[in-house]
Length: 124
Picture 1 (cartoon, rainbow, N blue to C red):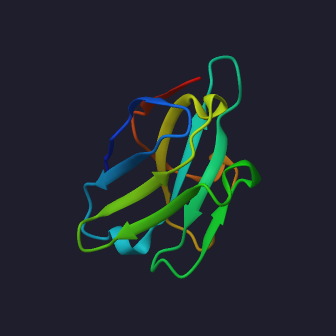
Picture 2 (picture 1 turned 60 degrees about the vertical axis):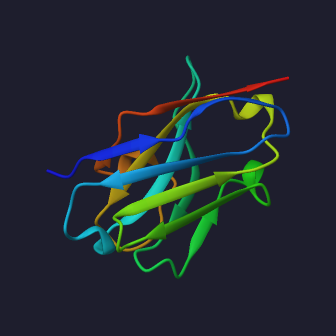
């Protein structure tokens, strides 16, 4: 059973930056597609970004393109989400997720492993 632990969240002013990290407890991290999702109370969890096993491909939600960057370090079992030019509407709980099948998917149902989530709050 793989565990995912997020860190790096917090409170930031609009226009600021945060970098989230997610560490996976597995020896086969490089075989997983990784994703970041976010959720606001009362709303569905939504896809933010995804990255393939060897970081050859990435995919972003339209609203974060050009502002967020997903990356991974397979030697450190870690996936990152660099968030720049943050907006109040980026405020949410951010989740790291992993899937063991080929291809980035945007539906949370396609991800089997999940972190506990971390709060990101952007003040206006």
